[in-house]
Image: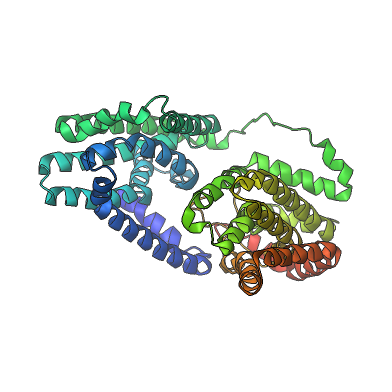
Length: 489
């Protein structure tokens, strides 16, 4: 039966009408995956020597054990966003003589074969090989690898249970931040508390039975949960959900555009993928800390422009590049109504404008690293407002792939086409090139001024530019409607 289910999944993939459209993206992602695996193999092979250099008075295995707890929390947090839940269209099987237990085992088996589980294996296997060459006991090392992989399986199946629970997500993030804060400020050493526990997987090989037992228990919990959900009545039963209706009456002050703003805000708040874009944008406010705190980047002014454009325009890029695909499930209905296209696009522009302004204010504390950082961030924000908003809306007219809003934002290529890769050229590369030209010819002040002036000019020409964008959307209207009707694109 497992072989038959795999065969059906294989046929479903290759007989899809959208296979040809997304094949190029799949190949590109395949190359990216190979690159990631090669990088992990190299990192795993060099980890022994890195730890030996960083902690010369400790065994690399003991040093690594201090950070396993943080690795588990971070991986669980990342999987919440990145890992797609195993999906199998079970409705045809509910009326067939296929045991529910078989379907549940198949879904969980597919999840165990996830590429995210292989990432850890490609990291720790080279590390284990180096340990063997360094004279570590083979049995201890091999059972340590088994124990770590059992923990990975535990994380995998825990993610299946908590994936749609935002309270658990906030709890995990809070524990991670609180634990790191206690360690960083020397209040309490969390890593020293858990280090002996994880080091025991190497020191006492028999302890490998503990994570294996936990993996079996969590698998069984998932199995029972899935088995209880696989019923035809559960599929036919009308779901009754209490709507969480927020008061968005303030949007009415925007006139005709207010109804579109209200629709967008409700869509963002009620759907997982759009809501995640907001969380991701807020997290990327801290992206500058990775660069501003490094001396090697202090004199690289073009890098500061990249950070300014990226941080103030992260929501612009993540949300704006998929306009109007966010509305793909009801786009044809909207276009059949007497809805002014100009107002529809202006509502999107207004929403993105608010996000750029908000992100700029959140980056103001970076003035701590110099007034030039604040000036460049301001110039970047103005450029995003005046130039990049019309540009990204224009490129949105080429989107013809449907998006299912309840899907995870990471590792999900729904709605992605060549447009999303091409749009990075005018949105991100062009301002950096412009800044670099004037920076090396004159000064960074003049270069920042050029970006700011271009943004102000673009903002003053907003009506004219929005007219051109509206004309483009009307020209592409029926092509987008036809594309959005194709599910699985």
